[in-house]
Image (cartoon, rainbow, N blue to C red):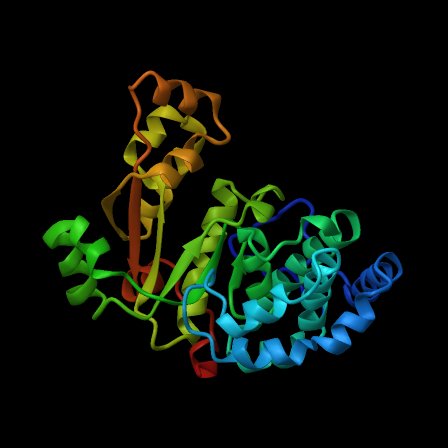
Amino acid sequence: MTGQAPFGNEVELSGWRGSLLWRDRARKASEVLTEQVPALAHVIRAQPFSGLDAHFIAHRGHYTHLPKPSLAQIRGVPDSVRPAYLSSLLLWQMDQFEERFSASGLHPQFAPHYIDSFHRIIDQILTKPEQVEVSKDSFLKDLWITRVVMIPALAQVWWPHSGLSLRQLASGGIDALSYCFLRCGGRRPFLEGHTHDSMVAQGHWTAQGWSETLRLAALALSTLRRHRGVFSTAWYFDPEVARISPRLAFLADLYARSGPHRFRVGTNAATIANATAKSATRRRLYAAGSYLPTDYCVVWGRANLLSAHPAPLGALADEK
């Protein structure tokens, strides 16, 4: 399965590889790992990936909380071999893509997005395999992408086993609670959006990329019938950000046109670190006490998002 890049609204992205063959590159990466780490084959035989697979299949928690038996197996691998072992795990999961994708029930338009991600992951395995660590958020996202559980969608990746907590909704007051329970019909299941720094580096974090991301979220909802909508929580949804960082002002326009509900969540050390990591302006304003990075949650109910981005003909017929 190679797929084409079936973008809506005449979207074109530089560096897009969703239509390129990837299996030969994956085999090459596997050969390179075996050559660089002679003990790898022995370790895989002793700690087969099938042992991890059974626990991953049943996992319905947060993407960062791996099943304890899986963590125990991974941590049982010698430190010197573990990065190559985890890289090989990603490649092993990719090798089952067609079967996993068919079972996912996702619309065929998502296939090239997975393939584009596979090329990115293979790049890292070939150039920086030592950076693959089980404690890294980037690896955990790639783990679930290669399992065809997390859904890649350019500016965001969507985690399907999620929902809004009562504590989170309470921070938004009666309006947030009403939107969630009356408009969406409940607080779970939702698709939860996350930023994947490895994908941001590809240049997809733009107005064009985000517009396509929301279209893809609606497309996912057209086949995930139980999901009540999608949500994402981040510092960049703060209304102040458009003033402080004008290049991100497009976000306000995008979500205003797609009918979500936005509410303040609060701030903490992680929020501050994320907001100030890549901007000297935000760091300076925070240090001066004139800007406090604050998380906001944006919730798109199913009806709102599907109305803004109608599903293509045939999508509803494929629902599972």
